Amino acid sequence: MFSAKTMPQGHPHGAMRRDEREITDPQEIEKIIQAGKVMYLALSSDDVPFVVPVFYAWDGEAFYFHSARSGTKINILKKNNKVSFAISLDHGVVEDEKICDFEARHRTVIGFGEAEFIEDMQEKSAVLDRIVAGFTDQKFEYPQANLKATLVTRINVLSIKGKSHGL
Image (tube, rainbow, N blue to C red; front, top):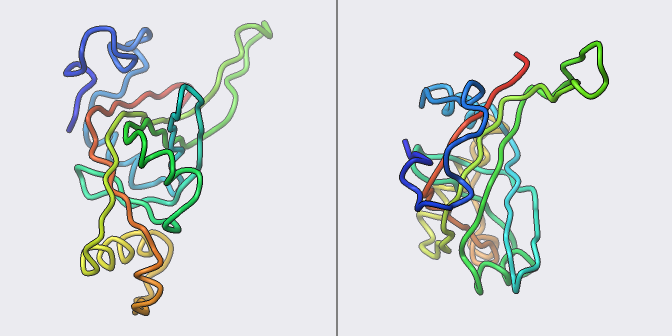
């Protein structure tokens, strides 16, 4: 598993301020990733942030998502392949007697990575199978025209960490 401790000093994915909330067990981080369906992907172009939800697959080292071959996120990734991502589960509120002490209940995985586009048709098909497996046990054949029109992106994870509170 990748660690925030390996990030350069000053990187926003450094040590967690509330370390009692940090999930350090790689198996717990893996459970959150496996239980999630949607990843929020943060991109930046010319100092303008852009966040987009994507369905994803995970192979233990990298995330994958699919999309059309063009559009805002793809245009941004072509200029800047650095990304941040978040997967969050178990949302709710931890109530308190004082309103200012209410907090968010959650289990969350966040991280940083670099995106690269996958063009190999067999690899694309295998990734699409992984993504679809998150929703159904059915198996599908992908028409060549659809595969050619689909872009599959791999996010090579540089840093990942988990956080939990209120559970």
